[in-house]
Amino acid sequence: MDLSSLLASNAAYREFTDRQIEDVELYEILDVARFAPSGGNRQGWRVVVIKDRLLREQIRDLYVLSWREYMAHVVADLVPFAPVDAGQWRGPVVDLELARDTPRPYKFSDHIDASPVMLLVLVELAQLAVLDNGLDRQSIVGGASVYPFCHNILLAAREKGLGGVMTTVLCRQEKEVRRIIGFPEGFGIASLVVLGEPKHEITRLRRRPVEQFVSVDRFDGEPFTAKA
Ligand SMILES: Cc1cc2nc3c(=O)[nH]c(=O)nc-3n(C[C@H](O)[C@H](O)[C@H](O)COP(=O)(O)O)c2cc1C
Image (tube, rainbow, N blue to C red):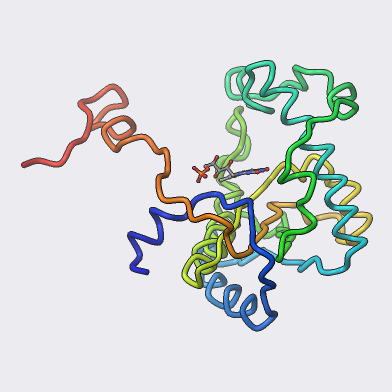
């Protein structure tokens, strides 16, 4: 697959065949993904391959709780945990306890433990050069030192005819995940990435056209278009 086709078919794959992914294949994926950039090339990522069945089930149960929190926002027509107040998050706008007690059946989260590969991607926070710290708005720069790595995992998987999805809802349960996986303070969860052989290929990604999000010179400038 050429790079353009790879990018254009890198959908969120959440349904997988029974095909197991051999360690050697996963190793190759990670061995390519590691060329991701990171601020100062500090490569603060750390990956835990979740293989043990009991751990997988525990992660699934925690994921489900987070999924319920997420869905409580969605059904209320809210962007989950969005920093809407002048770029700040001031606390929950839904009742999170009630949310966690409200079942939200969803095939993917309810069976996430059956995904052929589960990768818990952690990041060492002290390795992140967070240039927008203290800007009096939600900080975003730190993530840029780990998400290219996560995305590379997905792209490298696509190249092998596999697919997956980068998920973040599990971060809500970081304390409990830290306990069961045993990662130290100073590390945070960046993502739970799952991989497998897609049950169905996704060919049409819904994405905005360039003109809708690129402008010239100013935020309210002319939409950027390809000159004839
Ligand atoms: C930062 C980030 C966080 C995401 N978190 C989740 C998640 O927690 N659970 C999930 O199922 N998908 C998650 N996704 C996948 C997105 O929902 C998906 O990329 C988006 O809806 C586009 O889907 P498509 O490629 O199939 O069109 C996440 C994606 C990104 C980039």
